[in-house]
Image (cartoon, rainbow, N blue to C red):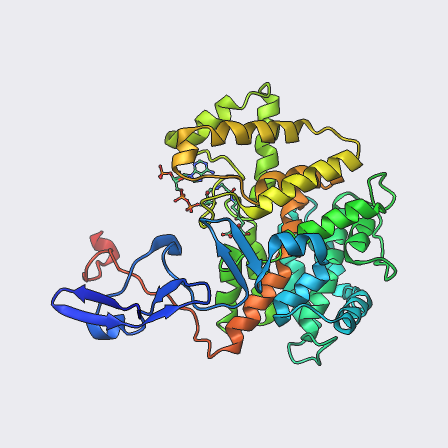
Length: 424
Ligand code: SDX
């Protein structure tokens, strides 16, 4: 039976068209609402409002399902590489052997970062947060590359270049912050291995371990896309003004930085450190999180969409054991995080609100064990999320994209006359 929607606004009755997606999701098209009734809808935070149709990622928050172009994250995480998944997100299909070989070769050949990006990094004060430096470097890339350049390996040139150069820029940011000499990209190493080598060569940290590089590659996959999240919606909205690709991605980096979004992975580790500092008892932090007056939130817990376990958190938790075991580290933080998860999931406050660990709850523990400073954690999230941002930017601009411009309900002062200064 066809689903219909009817809305009554005062004396007006309006039948609205309904769109049913390929997974049975139902969307009410309110495109004529204001013209026909004068009313708009209100939905702060957009919890009930779809930005449009998308064929990239499907997630079911009630069932804890996440699929990229129809492939379950659990299958991709165990079988594909990050470059394969990037191609899948961008092109809609897994690459053939020839397509993947071309992509790998092109990525390795385009890692060189333009010289002026070094100048941008050199101009940043030493205490600049890595996410600020990342956004600055990305947006200045538009001065050396054009959206009109010829495609490379079947991808828009700028998008391939940024995929290849983002880890290099990230490594430069880290090395500069540590006063270490820069390590040039090595075209003999694969994506994640080159990144870790450029980050940690000569520091005594794991820079050449295959298992650690595989874990890094898998973590990039788990962060690659997540439909209309805050930073992806930002990239789509900025792109809708026909701003260039680099400007749109730089805006996404800035949105991701917030502790309620991608910045949560850093905030989780800071929270766990605070628990350790206070004697390692988790009950006070659970109590704080339940106390509205505290303004404190249990970082790494809760999600706008997932009202069940975030499937990525489960996979990352497994990786935490693999990486810590490989590095011979028994991480007090991991034990603490597991204890905190158990305490929270046994507490009615969290159960009733369906607050489960999300993607950020365990990832910081792995990153720290690998040797990353916590200020770099969200940069790692950005490297993983780049193909998702790019796929959504392309999808939004492929259609007859109108510029995104939400309406509002004004609640300010009514019309009044200007008061001259001498009369105030
Ligand atoms: C990411 O959207 C995505 O897909 C994002 C992401 C991606 O891959 O792009 O998955 C990545 O951003 C994961 C989320 C990382 N952020 C955190 O871990 C920060 C901690 N989490 C919360 O701040 C919160 O859960 C959000 C921001 C994630 C979601 O916020 P919502 O959907 O706006 O939820 P809400 O604020 O309306 O909370 C509903 C209730 C409230 O209590 P009541 O008013 O009903 O009594 O749950 C409470 C909240 O106070 N609540 C929490 C909580 N999260 C929600 N209480 C304590 N601790 C928390 N973490």
